Image 1: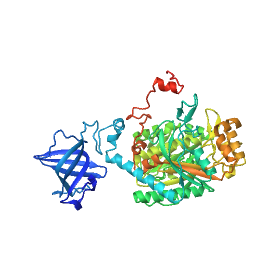
Image 2: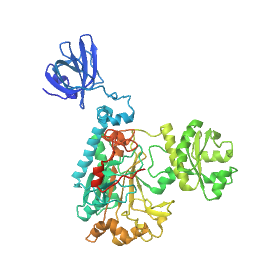
Image 3: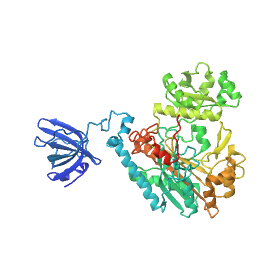
Image 4: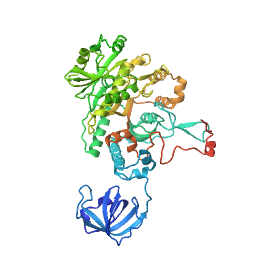
Length: 574
């Protein structure tokens, strides 16, 4: 009887079985050798006496074992197969392994670069493989839900024209069109809108996307998103579909009940109260405007800022007396956003110590801290123009959570962020650009003057945030040709440029376009959060490293001279 290693149990005691798998451990005790044999279903112990030839056997070799299942004299409760073992009658080596460059166990000595270089070994570790298996199950449940809701799964091209998504495109040359290039899609944005024009009504896709941008722990140059689009809907319709979909998938894969509908926050409230557009709501530390408490202060820095129409804002940490070293850690994290922060600790409602404790008046500091309703703790302060103050304190808030671990790691705090700015202002160029993409509809309140009052224009856009990460975003699209032309003009595109870039979409809109909108969910980032992985790389089977390099393939690599000639390309020397 052929069985997977992890499927052998007490039902098979006294029966002959055959298993195949990888040797994880070899332990010799007198004339008996104990072998741990593993596959993705689990591990089973095999005992072999001196009649079984085991010469030159190595860990991670692939073997076939025949034998009888027997009860263990000393059961191992930590092992799924811990009540039985297999008494070996024959062992065949299917593939002999060399000494591995890393310990292939849940706890390994290997640095990440070694793990990625030998990813096929890393994936044998349960802590890594289990995340990939969970990913498969979770994505399939998302798919199952949408199919049952009558969404149509449509694959869109990976060779296309550039799309305006805010990052650099990956450009693909072709020998069939000299000096012309494809772009790998940053998203299927244009295609899914065309599917709505085509009358599909409800579309989804598990889509591969590509963005050439600076990497971080939650970014990869190629990533996977759940892409969705619906016709004849409003924002609330898309939100309800996503909420019910997550509720279904989390129940099926994690047996987790989540509360719906999700919380909805205004963009301005996110920035004013949390300093970021993707707030982690598992902990409080709410920002407050404390300007009134420091009016007329003798502390010149604060006083001058207030006279210049700036603000003093801060947040208080209950019961935590921040040390100098802790503050320096927070300060380093926060000042990357452009401003300095200060701190003061308090005991029983009175100023105690801190970076500005000696130079700020007792009464003003005490009153500001007491306004939070705390008696003992730490007050973090920042002063300046409101946008920069918010960003700086938002970073400080996150850094404090990193130190004090306020957030419950088992909580999922889903939040919708709505009423976004339609445009972003670039201080270097002095111009406005589309905050999302130029097909995002202005809000109903902004329709009249979104192109003349760009600073205050709002979008029919929505992001879904989970535990401090943006895991998805979408919008209601522009379907009115005159509004679309105004939008292109507002971001500096001439009619000729708009036609050259997006003519195929604009032409399609001339033949009957339904009101529509959609959303894209970043699956890699979502799975990272759900599995509590350290980085997005842990939940991708074959990821690039933090520099965008595939260490296993040693790619990207140089092209041959012949290959470049075929593509009419030359390499430019640095």
